Length: 279
Image (cartoon, rainbow, N blue to C red):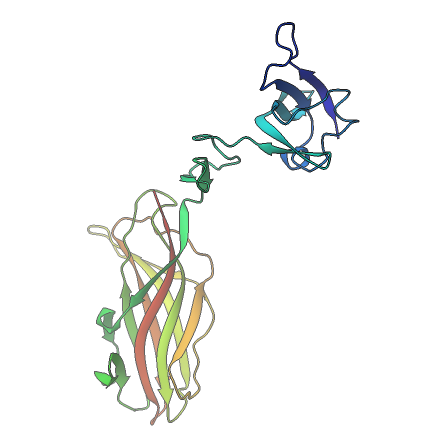
């Protein structure tokens, strides 16, 4: 604990005036100065505080650079123990904040603080209408029951790839817009296990009179091959989530399947988990 100076403004003609300003210079952190008992008979160096005092403090002060952080604080007293708290007033700011944060109200006091520019709990279901094509096999949309539809494969021993079009709303500015976090793959396997079953994610971008740029996006996780009574919901995480800031670009998710002769396989859809920037 290092308080370098305490000056109470009890100048001539101002004695008894409330509120009184008390100026303190300290090398301690904000967490330290707001700890109960930080100011006590020893650290106050003979100054007597009043509940109506307003404390102007520069904390985290560095004597070598002559810099610190200014705060306006109010003292509260509880059984003789003094606790300092940041003064909250309509329109002032709760620090620290980060560059690019969104300003929001901190409770109902009118005080403003910052919140992250990225909201990370978005989800979007990608249905069977987003299937681009199957490379092999006979497939059909079927109704299992009320509101329950699947893209069923006619049982046969063959290999196929199914493509899903994932076309998000993009922004050209770096680190802005849509950032895919993971994909829930929903599917059915019945009667007999499939031989292999994998998912792959690609970004595809287009330029006039140039070859399409196709980039594999690594995923963490694996799709099941075993028979299960009800639908699978398997999450595949994007190994290194990143914003897609390329003009005229989209994502394509592919499911590669090697089925056995009597495997009853069906696709239900994808559920995307993603983040978006607010501004």
